[in-house]
Image (cartoon, rainbow, N blue to C red; front, side):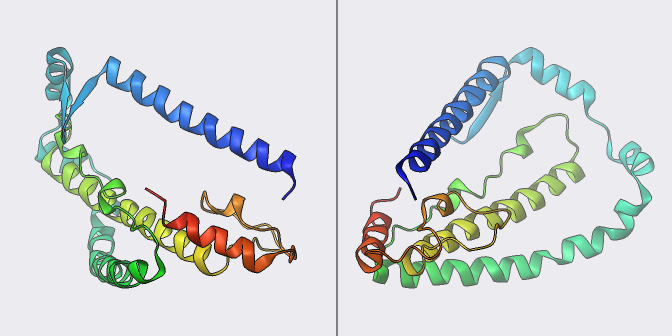
Length: 195
């Protein structure tokens, strides 16, 4: 990768971090404060949330029928998700120490905070819990796989692919064999310094 591209990628990453921080600060100032694991809303916001909450029976009657019909299929997926979670976590906890890779912190990806939203009824909170688990698990797994890919084969593909992880942009260009072994070792050493 040439210096200009590396510099642009570094600037993009810095801007993305700045944007995430600014959006989070704005949300926090406007609606809520995070105190430990609790999210606390202003009193007026809590009252507005309670007024918006739909009771279960009204929700059931106004819900789309296709959502109710497909519910068992969707929620049956929790079993393969849990098995995947167990396998990926086992892999990380057994292999990452051997490779010298910093472990991925599961709590950074699987976050259950939507239950604190007063405008959701218990069924909607259940849906949110399921989605937070599934989406968070995919992010957690993607980061474990990204670190594994960085350790074993930090090389970009010849073809453009969609949905690459953040580490991919820093990988070696396809076909760039100059000092491959030394550069591979640099990637591996960097994995021990990740947080």
